[in-house]
Image 1 (cartoon, rainbow, N blue to C red):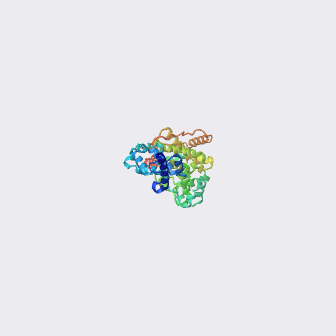
Image 2 (image 1 turned 90 degrees about the vertical axis):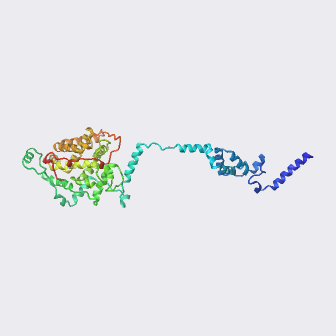
Image 3 (image 1 turned 180 degrees about the horizontal axis):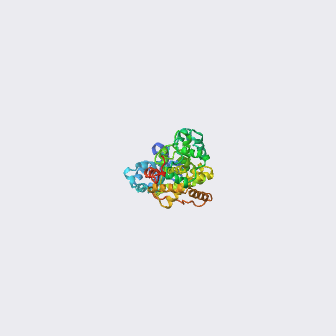
Length: 431
């Protein structure tokens, strides 16, 4: 009887408890507080679909661990099998002062406190300097940005000067050196032959171009400058006609026009000739690399202007007349003489370990040699170009530019031909 009453009472308790059960009384659980549901009841009370967020929170809870505070909060506010609520309340119930005691957060804090930036490599510093230099180059505005300026050849640039009126500049040229006394007699007896009459007009055109300056308003002048820049640097984008990027090419300032004293636009035509021919372009690039050597650096374009001055003087002193008469041409001979002189300078500069402090004396010795033996320099150029066409090693060899980067040309003290006193009266000429 007592056992049956207990059995009946237990069954009635379950039934009445089930009838009185409501979501508001027990939250989201299915049994009374403190009771562990059976397996069948747990399967029956399990939600149809478990939210993804609950799974993630459960994983975090297991990673962080459960302290005494977590157990008390979970036991007092939700059933043990309520994963979503217990995980959320577990995080909310942890005091801020206790967060530092958890192993995972402590490990993350240790890694963050021990982090230090790595040592910046020289390659990164060099790339940063190059990027800062690129930022100084302002692209042309307008339609030229969408359509880059087309490269100009030497023949096209020369044709431009052959078609425009240069009469005002031609009046200022002095085709030959005026000699008097013994100097005139010695030149008549032992000097080079006079230039053929049919070639004098071409000679005068060369000297007239040397009197013309750089005009930024002339589209042809701008194309010449941009072509030189693109060929030497390998850039495919246009650059401004004024800017610090011209110092990287070896001009002394942001405006190349200020460095053409004594050579005029002929200096730019010579550079254009050097970079637009496939054979001489390799030579120009080699010399350009030599000019950026960390010890033997020199301003490339400024050195080229000085060599153009030597070529002008050699033409006026009739040192090139014999070769011009032989080839029946003037402009090609002057161009080749310029390239041969530049090649010889680069060879001397590299092999004799010259620096910027030796520039004035090197140029002066080069001027004497060029006027005395122009045919020798031209022959050296022929041998070099023949070797380049066959893929042989160049005369300059590979340049290993290691160490500190070369300073800008404005930081160099460069001495040109015109900065040294002439060795004789025949070596002076108007600037």
